[in-house]
Image (tube, rainbow, N blue to C red; front, side, top):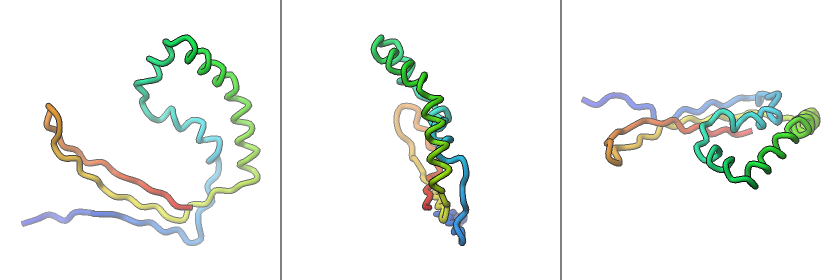
Length: 105
């Protein structure tokens, strides 16, 4: 006997939901994910200098994004979630489920 399986889920927002703080939040988006390459790249002198220079501009960039946020509004109208099964692969032979999310505004 088979079990029920959710193949996808859709959420439609009518009227679309206005999202605040989207542009400034994009600055912090990379912090949400583990980056294994950045520590290695920082050891290269020129890359390290570029990263430090960009970090010093962070405040100015965030202020600019707040100004953009005041003029442009982001609305969310649809969210779709789809489970993805990754079968066994590699030496450890593990399988896993992942969730794919897509947004429309």
